[in-house]
Length: 589
Image 1 (cartoon, rainbow, N blue to C red):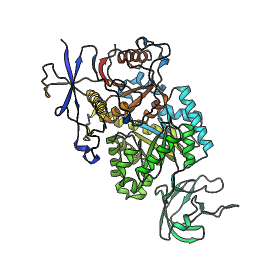
Image 2: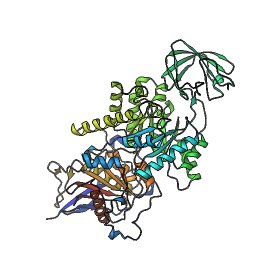
Image 3: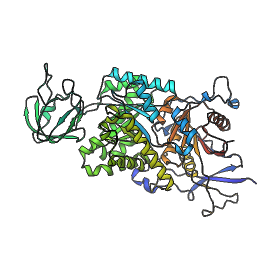
Image 4: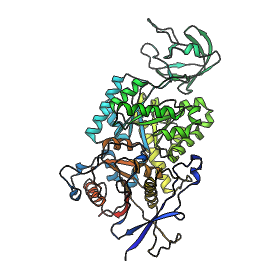
């Protein structure tokens, strides 16, 4: 006998709800809802909604997604089992074959590329080790050098099937030290030593303990008695004297000085538009902006990108690293496509003991607003020099994973450290272990996700994704009599995976926001969307051509994945789609 399943969709979403009310506005399945009947059959169970996704629901999405099927193939004949018709990286494929669905890592990993990791073989080693995003830091190297790195990452993706995205980090208005002189790759500043920071250009060899600064107004702006922090406080100096273009400082907290290290001394400045033009021309996936103080900076950059490249879908990441950023946190994150917790510079702006709570706040706000968040800076700082991390560093990484951040980032560890692959391996192993512990202990979050939809159509997409994520744990079934027994209606499904067919990436991001127990297979038609989805928690991005016919899409996907040994008959999946806003529950035939 057929049963009727009903999803209860809210019809009262408020597009203008203030963020301060988000925590108390959790959608309910039981009051003030519009009922949408869904017919349930034994094989498969399906629910289909006909409203199309609103274009206003862009979150880290691409507008250039081209739907449809392969040339010469109608939607009704998409039954090819040619495994080359689907793109997924070799590492994920191997993991799924050997260890199954639950083995996949949910937390994404970002690696800063430097001299020791810029070659094709080194980049491939990082990709094999789990790198999802390659970061290029415009504070170091020339644009020609960075262009070579981008070309090699693109070649790696094309030849090996990876989806490594590229993030360009702009210099912003930071002040940086120059080279240390000669061939020195580092210098040790000892307690009490006097060092000179100068804006002068030295024709001959520079005096001992003298460092160039890249800001001409440095000597005029700094005052005697000021504290100068190098690399977010790794080394500290006190300004004791100013002599023309030279600033003499006494070391008060010893440490290692590295070329091009940043100084925590801020000045008003504009974005580096030459670097941004370079990023646009190279087609990077993300541009990270330093020292964002308001949403106006983000909106200005987005308008600039749109004016210079009409079909560009570059995502803008706001780096939260100042007091002003924290004061305007919600508006900055709302305007951006994601955020980075730049803890090094942030720790120089606020008391150190406040950094952990600030990190958690940023992660939670990003999650509520459906924006990916990266935790960065000094995660494994000791591994720049040593092959194993400190136990405190492992605990720090574990906490970021426990907070359910989308991604973790290596900076100096992979850019100029002696053990980049080992550093990445530590991030990967700790992430996997904490994620497994979370599932085994059946930890349940206290965070309540609130409505973020701006239209009724968006509300449907949001409710579909919320329901699909919940069904990874249980399914509420309403018998055809219409009576819902909340106590007895729980049916443990033990879902193996969620499938999402998305041209824009929006519904994939909504599923990721829910942090379901099972992995999310995100199928999209364009390589650019696939790369950007690789930054978001729990998403395994595939490139696959598909149609608006969900039955054909599922049958074809099952055939392709089974041919590659990535799924097997009997696996239970939930499939959602943003073309017809549909949801289906079925076993792999």
